[in-house]
Image 1 (spheres, protein in one colour):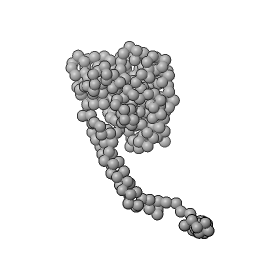
Image 2 (cartoon, helix red, strand yellow):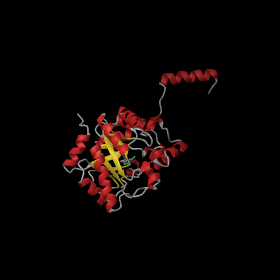
Image 3 (cartoon, protein in one colour):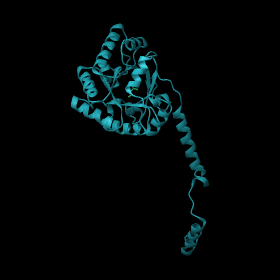
Image 4 (cartoon, helix red, strand yellow):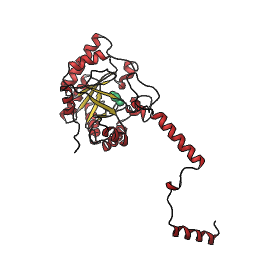
Length: 285
Ligand code: KIV
């Protein structure tokens, strides 16, 4: 019997100073394999916009695609806690936000992730939690606000901004968030926030002292090759592997070595004989 990771498991990790792993996934097979590998949390990230759909940034993906990817991931993963990103502009008012958060839960997510910390976001986090939808918060660099932030830039780069980051994280904790992602912030700032919160923090380029670590699976596997953030460690070279396999497949077709006799279906000898006789009669051969 598989013991499912829950928000309580993550809180226990925080309380016992244990680390947890989090990876994104967007499809059934990848979710199944990383779940079997023991990854604690699977994020159906809106990074799917870039690494799956090839869009320029995360703002082009909608709630329909997020729900579809969430359905696929939740079918593949049995143990990991599944968190799904609320797409950009899918929570322009509280009731729309609640409806779309509910949609992701109905698609198989166990929690949603919402970027930011305005009064309005705090209210949404509170209302989601009250309605039974756990919320993972997301601070530091929040990709959905990249046009406001002026691009992919490191956040909380000084003392005051670090105090402000903690203040925001505390408000989100107060509103009911069960964890908070800290993206692209100095390690010292993430450590300070982690040490002063009761809920777990998740580093996405936030250094070594957060409770959990998250990266985009396509980055970690070396599949997405358009760029590589500094904080990503590549554990594979799927890009080369896919290109090599596709090249071999292409060459085998051209040379006639694929498919081989073992890779085709045959009629029985009797049926083949009858077909031959029929062809002969029609002079089709
Ligand atoms: O969409 C995403 O992949 C994220 C990151 C935190 C990994 O939000």
